[in-house]
Length: 149
Image (cartoon, rainbow, N blue to C red):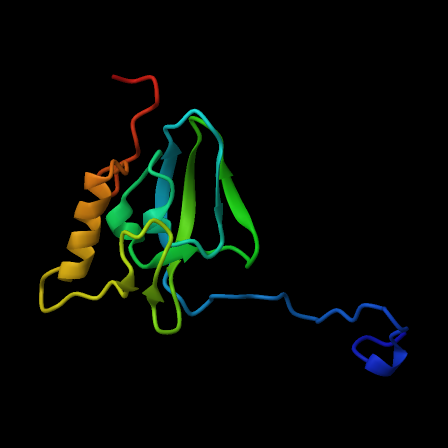
């Protein structure tokens, strides 16, 4: 069978491309270190607004505002209790308007500054997350181990 000739592929057969499949190459990637401080595994799907994930996950939530995991659609990352994993995040595409999840945002989420200040909507969402007990870690710093006091 010659490579790339669709006429030679039997019914139900597979035709492979000569180049690897890529996605999200044009989007900036933000890496965030995440620790599960809870006592149960937590699984996060590919398109969940990472800023609003389970409150027991400790990470730089401000850096995750308006972003989702940079993994294939319909897949997920699982955090076992005590796990600390660095995850890649990318901005949402399209209109970048999010509703639901944990209702911390419910609106437009691009992480753009207004002049030299953070957008008020982002600051309000961060405060709502803090008020509702969502865990945060300092920007760029790894979380403390679960057993540290």
